[in-house]
Image 1: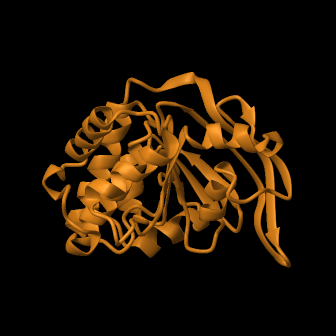
Image 2 (image 1 turned 30 degrees about the horizontal axis):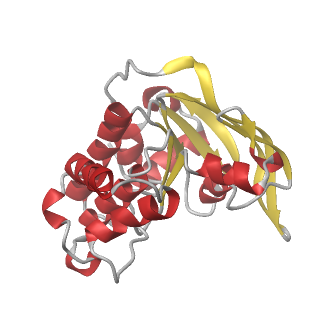
Length: 257
């Protein structure tokens, strides 16, 4: 069970999604999604591959647009924003890709500096170096600053990917399958890091996964997605407490006792 997080502000909604639909040709991916994320909360969107989880967070960050429905992020209707407004909003949203999305030709330090140089060009070198040092310390990899991504393990790459997302101090974190392809011990390390990021940086997060161990460890609330819609929401214990056939099927699929 995830430890209680007293920083959650249940009366403040940072993401509000209503009646969201998205199709690609005849493939109906999202079929009426509703979701609220509160300030300081971690929501896990749990579902098998192909259920629409990743499409959902791409729509939140305006990498994709819905066919219908509304997405309100930090008080702004995403689909109505102009280019500059959307750019400003995206600086407040951290998107953690499955593979870490590091530049192989740059050192770890250069990877972390890149978004600062691009988005905060007037930041001094001292401020930039201090922020890089803070983020590396937060993800437990200060010693890797001069290493190349190819020299890192899969778990280290994930950590640096999270660090590069944190470097701009986003209010919202979107994690896409953060434990995919990792061994159980490294998965535990990443789950612990997600919780530490929530507490230390006061983030609100949506965590996309099909990993029940990740869901149980990181989620203040679980939202189970099946065939493009949510079929149950609540704490981990609430979601998996009954004998709903669709829920038990997913539980058994993960082989978690």
